[in-house]
Image (cartoon, rainbow, N blue to C red; front, top):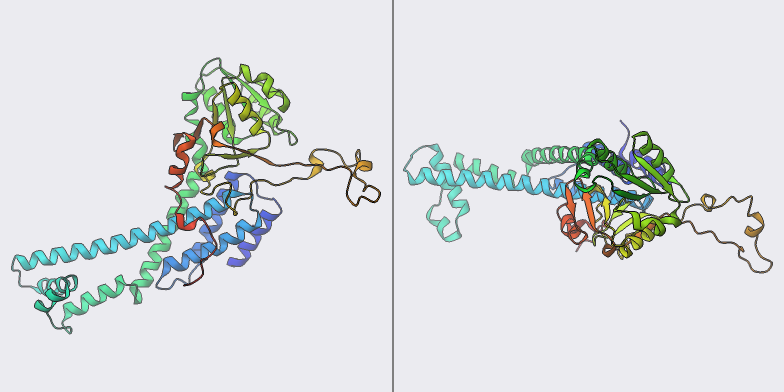
Length: 410
Protein backbone atom coordinates (compact mmCIF):
# COMPACT_ATOMS: atom_id res chain seq x y z
CA UNK A 1 0.00 0.00 0.00
CA UNK A 2 1.39 3.40 -1.00
CA UNK A 3 2.03 5.72 1.92
CA UNK A 4 -0.10 8.79 2.55
CA UNK A 5 2.71 11.28 2.03
CA UNK A 6 3.77 9.55 -1.19
CA UNK A 7 0.26 9.91 -2.62
CA UNK A 8 0.11 13.57 -1.66
CA UNK A 9 3.58 14.30 -3.05
CA UNK A 10 2.74 12.62 -6.36
CA UNK A 11 -0.49 14.60 -6.72
CA UNK A 12 1.27 17.84 -5.77
CA UNK A 13 3.90 17.17 -8.42
CA UNK A 14 1.25 16.66 -11.09
CA UNK A 15 -0.48 19.91 -10.14
CA UNK A 16 2.76 21.87 -10.27
CA UNK A 17 3.70 20.47 -13.67
CA UNK A 18 0.16 21.14 -15.01
CA UNK A 19 -0.39 17.45 -15.67
CA UNK A 20 -3.90 17.89 -14.27
CA UNK A 21 -6.01 20.63 -15.89
CA UNK A 22 -9.69 21.35 -16.23
CA UNK A 23 -12.09 21.89 -13.36
CA UNK A 24 -13.97 18.59 -13.74
CA UNK A 25 -10.88 16.38 -14.02
CA UNK A 26 -9.16 18.24 -11.20
CA UNK A 27 -12.21 18.01 -8.94
CA UNK A 28 -12.67 14.30 -9.54
CA UNK A 29 -9.02 13.39 -8.97
CA UNK A 30 -8.89 15.53 -5.82
CA UNK A 31 -11.98 13.83 -4.40
CA UNK A 32 -10.56 10.39 -5.23
CA UNK A 33 -7.27 11.26 -3.51
CA UNK A 34 -9.02 12.47 -0.36
CA UNK A 35 -11.17 9.33 -0.32
CA UNK A 36 -8.05 7.14 -0.35
CA UNK A 37 -6.32 9.24 2.29
CA UNK A 38 -9.35 9.15 4.59
CA UNK A 39 -9.64 5.37 4.24
CA UNK A 40 -5.95 4.96 5.13
CA UNK A 41 -6.10 7.37 8.06
CA UNK A 42 -6.30 4.89 10.92
CA UNK A 43 -5.18 6.96 13.90
CA UNK A 44 -8.58 8.27 14.95
CA UNK A 45 -8.69 9.10 18.67
CA UNK A 46 -11.81 9.85 20.68
CA UNK A 47 -12.24 13.18 18.89
CA UNK A 48 -12.30 11.47 15.49
CA UNK A 49 -14.01 14.28 13.59
CA UNK A 50 -11.54 16.90 14.82
CA UNK A 51 -8.56 14.71 13.93
CA UNK A 52 -9.95 13.89 10.49
CA UNK A 53 -10.74 17.55 9.82
CA UNK A 54 -7.23 18.61 10.79
CA UNK A 55 -5.74 15.90 8.55
CA UNK A 56 -7.81 16.87 5.49
CA UNK A 57 -7.12 20.54 6.13
CA UNK A 58 -3.35 19.98 6.20
CA UNK A 59 -3.46 17.97 2.97
CA UNK A 60 -5.64 20.61 1.35
CA UNK A 61 -3.10 23.33 2.13
CA UNK A 62 -0.43 21.39 0.25
CA UNK A 63 -2.66 20.75 -2.76
CA UNK A 64 -3.83 24.34 -3.08
CA UNK A 65 -0.29 25.72 -2.75
CA UNK A 66 0.83 23.46 -5.62
CA UNK A 67 -1.42 25.24 -8.14
CA UNK A 68 -3.52 28.07 -6.66
CA UNK A 69 -5.22 28.89 -9.95
CA UNK A 70 -6.95 25.48 -10.01
CA UNK A 71 -9.73 26.58 -7.68
CA UNK A 72 -11.50 23.23 -8.04
CA UNK A 73 -8.90 21.72 -5.70
CA UNK A 74 -9.84 24.08 -2.87
CA UNK A 75 -13.52 23.62 -3.67
CA UNK A 76 -13.35 19.85 -3.20
CA UNK A 77 -11.22 20.10 -0.06
CA UNK A 78 -13.78 22.45 1.49
CA UNK A 79 -16.64 20.20 0.34
CA UNK A 80 -15.02 17.21 2.05
CA UNK A 81 -14.47 19.22 5.23
CA UNK A 82 -18.15 20.17 5.15
CA UNK A 83 -19.05 16.49 4.68
CA UNK A 84 -17.01 15.51 7.75
CA UNK A 85 -18.75 18.12 9.87
CA UNK A 86 -22.19 17.11 8.60
CA UNK A 87 -21.61 13.40 9.18
CA UNK A 88 -20.22 14.06 12.65
CA UNK A 89 -23.25 16.20 13.50
CA UNK A 90 -25.58 13.52 12.13
CA UNK A 91 -23.86 10.84 14.23
CA UNK A 92 -24.07 13.02 17.32
CA UNK A 93 -27.72 13.79 16.66
CA UNK A 94 -28.52 10.09 16.31
CA UNK A 95 -26.76 9.38 19.61
CA UNK A 96 -28.65 12.11 21.41
CA UNK A 97 -31.90 11.01 19.82
CA UNK A 98 -31.38 7.40 20.91
CA UNK A 99 -30.58 8.39 24.48
CA UNK A 100 -33.59 10.68 24.60
CA UNK A 101 -35.86 7.95 23.23
CA UNK A 102 -34.63 5.44 25.82
CA UNK A 103 -35.15 7.94 28.62
CA UNK A 104 -38.66 8.81 27.51
CA UNK A 105 -39.60 5.13 27.21
CA UNK A 106 -38.19 4.40 30.65
CA UNK A 107 -40.07 7.29 32.23
CA UNK A 108 -43.29 5.98 30.66
CA UNK A 109 -42.61 2.59 32.28
CA UNK A 110 -42.30 4.27 35.67
CA UNK A 111 -45.51 6.21 35.17
CA UNK A 112 -47.33 2.95 34.35
CA UNK A 113 -45.96 1.31 37.51
CA UNK A 114 -44.03 -1.49 35.77
CA UNK A 115 -41.86 -3.11 38.42
CA UNK A 116 -39.15 -4.73 36.36
CA UNK A 117 -35.50 -4.23 35.60
CA UNK A 118 -36.31 -1.52 33.04
CA UNK A 119 -37.99 0.57 35.72
CA UNK A 120 -34.77 0.63 37.70
CA UNK A 121 -32.84 1.70 34.63
CA UNK A 122 -35.50 4.29 33.95
CA UNK A 123 -35.08 5.80 37.39
CA UNK A 124 -31.36 6.19 36.77
CA UNK A 125 -31.93 7.79 33.35
CA UNK A 126 -34.57 10.06 34.83
CA UNK A 127 -32.17 11.05 37.55
CA UNK A 128 -29.39 11.82 35.06
CA UNK A 129 -31.66 14.02 32.99
CA UNK A 130 -33.25 15.93 35.86
CA UNK A 131 -31.98 19.09 37.58
CA UNK A 132 -29.90 18.66 40.77
CA UNK A 133 -32.81 19.32 43.15
CA UNK A 134 -35.00 16.66 41.53
CA UNK A 135 -32.13 14.16 41.32
CA UNK A 136 -31.91 14.21 45.12
CA UNK A 137 -35.49 12.91 45.31
CA UNK A 138 -34.82 9.97 42.97
CA UNK A 139 -31.49 8.95 44.39
CA UNK A 140 -30.35 5.43 43.69
CA UNK A 141 -27.39 3.23 44.42
CA UNK A 142 -24.42 3.90 42.14
CA UNK A 143 -23.47 0.21 42.35
CA UNK A 144 -26.71 -1.05 40.85
CA UNK A 145 -26.58 -2.85 37.46
CA UNK A 146 -28.79 -0.24 35.87
CA UNK A 147 -26.53 2.55 37.05
CA UNK A 148 -23.52 0.77 35.57
CA UNK A 149 -25.37 0.32 32.29
CA UNK A 150 -26.34 3.98 32.09
CA UNK A 151 -22.82 5.03 33.05
CA UNK A 152 -21.41 2.95 30.23
CA UNK A 153 -23.86 4.51 27.79
CA UNK A 154 -22.94 7.99 28.91
CA UNK A 155 -19.24 7.18 28.63
CA UNK A 156 -19.77 5.98 25.08
CA UNK A 157 -21.74 9.11 24.31
CA UNK A 158 -18.86 11.21 25.62
CA UNK A 159 -16.39 9.35 23.41
CA UNK A 160 -14.62 6.95 25.81
CA UNK A 161 -13.35 3.40 25.42
CA UNK A 162 -14.57 1.00 22.77
CA UNK A 163 -17.63 3.08 21.98
CA UNK A 164 -15.36 5.91 20.82
CA UNK A 165 -13.50 3.58 18.46
CA UNK A 166 -16.79 2.31 17.07
CA UNK A 167 -18.07 5.87 16.55
CA UNK A 168 -14.82 6.78 14.78
CA UNK A 169 -15.21 3.83 12.40
CA UNK A 170 -18.81 4.73 11.69
CA UNK A 171 -17.83 8.33 11.05
CA UNK A 172 -15.10 7.35 8.59
CA UNK A 173 -17.42 4.94 6.82
CA UNK A 174 -20.13 7.59 6.47
CA UNK A 175 -17.63 10.16 5.21
CA UNK A 176 -16.31 7.76 2.56
CA UNK A 177 -19.86 7.03 1.39
CA UNK A 178 -20.56 10.76 1.11
CA UNK A 179 -17.33 11.34 -0.83
CA UNK A 180 -18.33 8.52 -3.19
CA UNK A 181 -21.60 10.35 -3.82
CA UNK A 182 -19.64 13.54 -4.46
CA UNK A 183 -17.48 11.76 -7.06
CA UNK A 184 -20.59 10.37 -8.72
CA UNK A 185 -22.11 13.85 -8.87
CA UNK A 186 -18.96 15.17 -10.53
CA UNK A 187 -19.02 12.38 -13.11
CA UNK A 188 -22.69 12.83 -14.01
CA UNK A 189 -23.13 16.60 -13.66
CA UNK A 190 -22.87 17.14 -17.43
CA UNK A 191 -25.94 14.93 -17.93
CA UNK A 192 -28.11 17.04 -15.63
CA UNK A 193 -26.84 20.20 -17.31
CA UNK A 194 -27.52 18.87 -20.80
CA UNK A 195 -31.10 17.95 -19.91
CA UNK A 196 -31.94 21.64 -19.54
CA UNK A 197 -30.75 22.56 -23.05
CA UNK A 198 -34.09 21.90 -24.71
CA UNK A 199 -35.74 24.51 -22.46
CA UNK A 200 -33.30 27.25 -23.52
CA UNK A 201 -32.37 26.58 -27.15
CA UNK A 202 -35.15 26.83 -29.74
CA UNK A 203 -35.53 26.40 -33.51
CA UNK A 204 -33.60 28.65 -35.88
CA UNK A 205 -31.64 30.34 -33.13
CA UNK A 206 -28.01 31.42 -33.32
CA UNK A 207 -25.80 30.48 -30.37
CA UNK A 208 -22.35 31.91 -29.73
CA UNK A 209 -19.61 30.33 -27.62
CA UNK A 210 -15.87 30.74 -27.06
CA UNK A 211 -13.13 28.13 -27.09
CA UNK A 212 -13.94 24.59 -26.05
CA UNK A 213 -15.91 23.40 -23.03
CA UNK A 214 -17.08 19.81 -22.57
CA UNK A 215 -20.17 21.11 -20.76
CA UNK A 216 -21.03 23.39 -23.69
CA UNK A 217 -20.53 20.58 -26.18
CA UNK A 218 -22.85 18.23 -24.23
CA UNK A 219 -25.35 21.07 -23.81
CA UNK A 220 -25.51 21.84 -27.54
CA UNK A 221 -25.56 18.19 -28.58
CA UNK A 222 -28.45 17.51 -26.20
CA UNK A 223 -30.48 20.24 -27.89
CA UNK A 224 -29.65 18.74 -31.29
CA UNK A 225 -30.86 15.31 -30.13
CA UNK A 226 -34.19 16.90 -29.20
CA UNK A 227 -34.66 17.89 -32.86
CA UNK A 228 -33.65 21.49 -32.31
CA UNK A 229 -32.26 23.11 -35.48
CA UNK A 230 -29.88 25.99 -34.70
CA UNK A 231 -26.59 27.56 -35.78
CA UNK A 232 -23.48 27.77 -33.61
CA UNK A 233 -20.85 30.50 -33.93
CA UNK A 234 -17.57 29.66 -32.23
CA UNK A 235 -14.93 32.26 -31.38
CA UNK A 236 -11.67 30.41 -31.92
CA UNK A 237 -10.18 31.30 -28.52
CA UNK A 238 -6.69 32.49 -29.42
CA UNK A 239 -3.90 31.79 -28.69
CA UNK A 240 -4.75 28.16 -27.92
CA UNK A 241 -7.46 27.99 -30.63
CA UNK A 242 -9.56 25.43 -28.77
CA UNK A 243 -12.60 26.67 -30.71
CA UNK A 244 -11.28 24.81 -33.74
CA UNK A 245 -11.51 21.53 -31.83
CA UNK A 246 -15.06 22.25 -30.68
CA UNK A 247 -16.10 23.16 -34.22
CA UNK A 248 -14.88 19.81 -35.53
CA UNK A 249 -16.68 17.93 -32.76
CA UNK A 250 -19.98 19.73 -33.33
CA UNK A 251 -19.74 19.33 -37.11
CA UNK A 252 -19.37 15.56 -36.65
CA UNK A 253 -22.57 15.64 -34.59
CA UNK A 254 -24.42 17.34 -37.45
CA UNK A 255 -24.64 20.87 -36.03
CA UNK A 256 -24.33 23.93 -38.27
CA UNK A 257 -21.08 25.51 -37.12
CA UNK A 258 -19.13 28.63 -38.06
CA UNK A 259 -15.73 29.57 -36.67
CA UNK A 260 -14.97 33.26 -36.26
CA UNK A 261 -11.98 35.17 -34.99
CA UNK A 262 -12.16 36.61 -31.50
CA UNK A 263 -12.04 40.14 -32.90
CA UNK A 264 -15.20 39.49 -34.96
CA UNK A 265 -17.42 38.92 -31.92
CA UNK A 266 -18.75 42.47 -31.72
CA UNK A 267 -19.51 42.46 -35.45
CA UNK A 268 -21.50 39.22 -35.27
CA UNK A 269 -23.24 39.75 -31.92
CA UNK A 270 -26.28 41.44 -33.49
CA UNK A 271 -27.19 38.13 -35.16
CA UNK A 272 -26.83 36.07 -31.99
CA UNK A 273 -29.85 35.01 -29.87
CA UNK A 274 -27.94 33.58 -26.92
CA UNK A 275 -24.40 33.08 -25.63
CA UNK A 276 -23.53 29.77 -23.94
CA UNK A 277 -20.10 29.39 -22.33
CA UNK A 278 -18.23 27.20 -19.90
CA UNK A 279 -16.10 28.61 -17.10
CA UNK A 280 -13.08 27.85 -14.96
CA UNK A 281 -14.74 28.86 -11.68
CA UNK A 282 -17.81 30.63 -10.30
CA UNK A 283 -17.08 33.01 -7.44
CA UNK A 284 -19.27 33.65 -4.41
CA UNK A 285 -20.61 36.98 -5.71
CA UNK A 286 -21.83 35.43 -8.97
CA UNK A 287 -18.85 36.47 -11.06
CA UNK A 288 -16.86 34.00 -13.16
CA UNK A 289 -13.28 33.22 -14.04
CA UNK A 290 -13.32 32.07 -17.65
CA UNK A 291 -10.96 31.65 -20.63
CA UNK A 292 -9.34 34.84 -21.86
CA UNK A 293 -11.58 36.80 -24.21
CA UNK A 294 -14.76 36.05 -22.26
CA UNK A 295 -15.06 39.55 -20.80
CA UNK A 296 -15.02 41.03 -24.30
CA UNK A 297 -17.93 38.77 -25.29
CA UNK A 298 -19.83 39.64 -22.10
CA UNK A 299 -19.46 43.37 -22.79
CA UNK A 300 -20.71 42.92 -26.35
CA UNK A 301 -23.67 40.86 -25.10
CA UNK A 302 -24.55 43.53 -22.56
CA UNK A 303 -24.41 46.22 -25.23
CA UNK A 304 -26.83 44.33 -27.49
CA UNK A 305 -28.99 42.81 -24.70
CA UNK A 306 -28.09 39.24 -25.62
CA UNK A 307 -28.63 36.64 -22.85
CA UNK A 308 -25.33 35.38 -21.44
CA UNK A 309 -25.75 31.82 -20.13
CA UNK A 310 -23.06 30.06 -18.08
CA UNK A 311 -23.05 26.26 -17.79
CA UNK A 312 -21.17 25.04 -14.70
CA UNK A 313 -21.10 22.09 -12.34
CA UNK A 314 -21.53 22.57 -8.61
CA UNK A 315 -17.89 21.56 -8.14
CA UNK A 316 -16.98 24.83 -9.90
CA UNK A 317 -18.78 26.95 -7.30
CA UNK A 318 -16.07 28.63 -5.25
CA UNK A 319 -17.00 30.04 -1.80
CA UNK A 320 -14.39 32.79 -2.06
CA UNK A 321 -14.55 36.29 -3.50
CA UNK A 322 -12.21 37.78 -6.04
CA UNK A 323 -10.69 40.07 -3.40
CA UNK A 324 -9.80 37.19 -1.04
CA UNK A 325 -6.02 36.86 -0.68
CA UNK A 326 -6.34 33.06 -1.13
CA UNK A 327 -7.65 33.53 -4.68
CA UNK A 328 -5.29 33.67 -7.64
CA UNK A 329 -7.40 35.01 -10.49
CA UNK A 330 -4.98 34.56 -13.35
CA UNK A 331 -1.76 33.04 -14.54
CA UNK A 332 0.59 34.01 -17.34
CA UNK A 333 1.23 31.28 -19.87
CA UNK A 334 4.30 30.84 -22.03
CA UNK A 335 4.81 33.61 -24.63
CA UNK A 336 5.53 30.86 -27.14
CA UNK A 337 1.74 30.43 -27.52
CA UNK A 338 1.58 33.95 -28.95
CA UNK A 339 4.74 34.15 -31.08
CA UNK A 340 7.67 32.09 -32.29
CA UNK A 341 10.90 32.99 -30.55
CA UNK A 342 12.93 32.44 -33.73
CA UNK A 343 11.03 35.11 -35.63
CA UNK A 344 11.35 37.70 -32.86
CA UNK A 345 14.82 36.84 -31.56
CA UNK A 346 16.19 40.31 -32.35
CA UNK A 347 13.42 42.07 -30.45
CA UNK A 348 13.91 39.74 -27.52
CA UNK A 349 17.55 40.79 -27.14
CA UNK A 350 18.34 43.14 -24.32
CA UNK A 351 18.69 46.78 -25.28
CA UNK A 352 22.09 48.36 -24.90
CA UNK A 353 22.38 49.72 -21.40
CA UNK A 354 18.67 49.25 -20.72
CA UNK A 355 18.94 46.02 -18.76
CA UNK A 356 15.51 44.88 -19.97
CA UNK A 357 14.16 43.26 -23.15
CA UNK A 358 12.74 45.45 -25.90
CA UNK A 359 9.71 43.20 -26.35
CA UNK A 360 7.30 42.03 -23.65
CA UNK A 361 4.72 39.32 -24.36
CA UNK A 362 1.69 39.01 -22.08
CA UNK A 363 -0.33 35.79 -22.38
CA UNK A 364 -2.99 35.62 -19.63
CA UNK A 365 -4.99 32.43 -19.28
CA UNK A 366 -8.26 33.78 -17.86
CA UNK A 367 -10.65 36.72 -17.75
CA UNK A 368 -12.68 37.97 -14.80
CA UNK A 369 -16.33 38.69 -15.71
CA UNK A 370 -18.43 40.56 -13.11
CA UNK A 371 -21.94 39.31 -12.25
CA UNK A 372 -23.73 42.29 -13.79
CA UNK A 373 -22.69 41.06 -17.25
CA UNK A 374 -24.19 37.58 -16.74
CA UNK A 375 -27.80 36.46 -17.19
CA UNK A 376 -28.19 32.86 -16.01
CA UNK A 377 -26.25 29.97 -14.49
CA UNK A 378 -27.25 26.48 -15.61
CA UNK A 379 -25.96 23.94 -13.08
CA UNK A 380 -26.54 20.24 -12.49
CA UNK A 381 -29.12 21.16 -9.83
CA UNK A 382 -31.02 23.77 -11.87
CA UNK A 383 -30.85 27.28 -13.23
CA UNK A 384 -30.06 30.28 -11.04
CA UNK A 385 -29.48 33.99 -11.39
CA UNK A 386 -26.07 35.44 -10.47
CA UNK A 387 -27.54 37.03 -7.33
CA UNK A 388 -28.53 33.60 -5.97
CA UNK A 389 -25.08 32.02 -6.23
CA UNK A 390 -24.06 33.19 -2.77
CA UNK A 391 -27.08 31.46 -1.23
CA UNK A 392 -26.43 28.32 -3.27
CA UNK A 393 -22.82 28.14 -2.11
CA UNK A 394 -23.94 28.24 1.53
CA UNK A 395 -25.52 24.79 1.04
CA UNK A 396 -22.22 23.21 0.04
CA UNK A 397 -19.61 24.91 2.18
CA UNK A 398 -19.16 25.84 5.82
CA UNK A 399 -17.99 29.33 6.73
CA UNK A 400 -15.43 27.75 9.07
CA UNK A 401 -13.59 26.22 6.11
CA UNK A 402 -13.20 29.28 3.90
CA UNK A 403 -9.65 29.75 5.18
CA UNK A 404 -7.88 26.42 5.29
CA UNK A 405 -5.01 27.63 7.45
CA UNK A 406 -5.30 26.23 10.91
CA UNK A 407 -6.27 28.65 13.62
CA UNK A 408 -3.77 29.05 16.47
CA UNK A 409 -4.75 27.37 19.71
CA UNK A 410 -6.17 29.73 22.29
